[in-house]
Image (cartoon, rainbow, N blue to C red; front, side, top):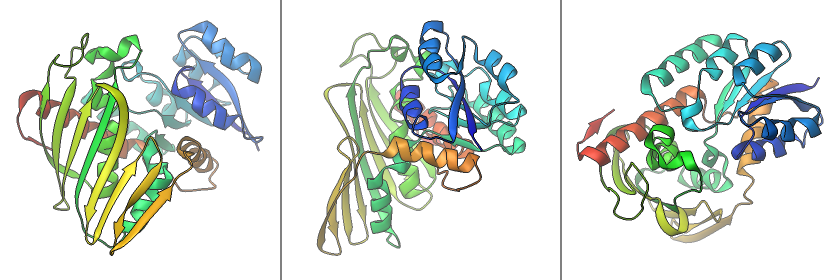
Length: 320
């Protein structure tokens, strides 16, 4: 039986998920919506799918034929697609972050939970092989500290530099790092922070560098350094645990460190996006249970990033 899939959003990350979908003989794209009609047709026509310029129109027209919907749009553009799809019983893959407004995200979470549809959010680091290896090495050990860097340059995307459209770097980009910290250390209790305004990058209406410290329910503490003003990109995570030190490089897909006095190294293959989307398709078909970040879990990461942004902007300690 063929799994039928629709897409809201045809640019950026959608292309990565479409490439994975194309590898399946028993899964097919039936419809795609994008506000750029030409872009929607460029995706739809070669695959024999229907193109739309309105995601709501797509869901209404295709609801009876869709098994799953991929929502791959900027954070400001979440206009109730998830809730409308859930009303129609359509399973959902949603790219991060899940929105910009805390109350809207909470209401969507409640509706999706009550609907019973499968949900997955694109926190792809959970599917990185280096993350799996780190969790294997840390299993049974007390993790005490994680220190991470997410340093990049400002993306060449017009909406990204506006807080009203992206939420700022912590909400839109560094959310991956906050999610890794939750995945390795558990839930966050408090956030402290500081940041710089317009010191390094022009044209932003949010901080261009931040330093945030998280206190976790486990008793561990972690730190995240973010900037969108670096000419070189890095996404590195360092973990100190009982008799262990690990360093993970998510752009190089490498892990190294020392565990019980022995040096360890591991090289991942960078297949994290494929593994993530395959897990979603398996869950839709009822053939697997490897969804590592459903909408409710992703909503918690979203709340942590909002708290981190507030802490960096105000200097206050924010309780979650």
